Length: 80
Image (cartoon, rainbow, N blue to C red):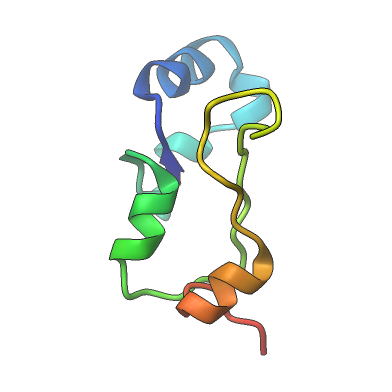
């Protein structure tokens, strides 16, 4: 899991245990605290699923959204 804000993850871990159901502590989970866009552009690994919680560029100063096509062309998303 890649999340920009470590503090938000820690708050979720502490106060929302019924939502995450221990996923943050699961041995299969690796947490990275950085911009997911930068992470995906840097990593050579491919993923079966990419779920992005992105900001709305119409109302914020965030970066442009990435689409399924963008991730597929970069090689981060398995589409077979």
